[in-house]
Image (cartoon, rainbow over all chains, first blue to last red; front, top):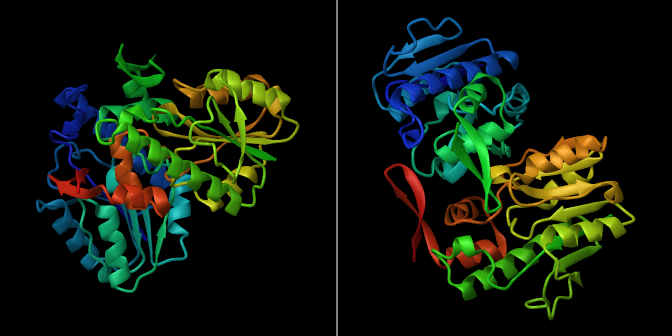
Length: 208
Length: 208
């Protein structure tokens, strides 16, 4: 099997722009990417591709193979799946709470497809045993779409239910989850800039 | 063992007020409460207490025992734990995605305490094998607080990692999760009022 991580560093994570500058966001996504790669490797996955529209930020990448594809995410991933000859795990690069145990759990699924839902109908991880018979459609409610693509093509699906793997870092409130539940370089980066603040019974982010 | 559900119907779920009226929110929390009770019963839990500051909305409750306590949540729960003579599972009433399998998984923990984190540092379920030696402190980052209370009193803790059990329904965006992942009366109630709308690649709530 192989893992593929779609990745784009340039002007990444615009929804974090209320709290992080462009330079900070670019630095932060690189830390998250490296953490996801390390997690995959710790889970025993050796073959890791990064699928990116640009070499920016990947010039010195030694831990994974870089595939350049300037098409949009879905087109690039579907071309990748079409050519794949083994099971493929598509892992988003913004999952610093993903652990090796999650990865092992996902790839040991008995079903044809295993999906980790993210917040708001997203798809955080998608493991596909027969990639040439599957097509992805990210954006929107991709979780429901990916479930129905599997069903329509007669492939059984497992929904992998995890709060931590289900937490993709898109918005400032997601950084709260990283500070509470995270570890490693991505968490350290954020904890140098923010601390948790508790006001009126709720937790939010405060600049340091 | 026993389960206890803290509950207050009057003017419940104020953070849903941008999308639901007071009457609707009160109707909705009652549906969620009943769904949580049914889930517990399906998991084989017979002894269920509802801890409430008022009988409002509980006048005809037949599925569970009602305990009135006008103190604040923490005071009432700690009094309850103090008097408990068996393991206690504190379950929030706003967890319509909680399943019997989650409940069985939580109560079969090998540790002294099992905690289900919710978004933003919340505690959605807290299972305590030795309740007389434990005190709760909800609000704020209760997840971290509850972990540290366990550690300080020498009790081992399991963190139960679930996206679905981790989804408490507090804000309009949580209703998106209910529509995507839910079933039962609470989901049906919301799906009569709202549908999922996909705009600019993201899922949101639209009135019907």
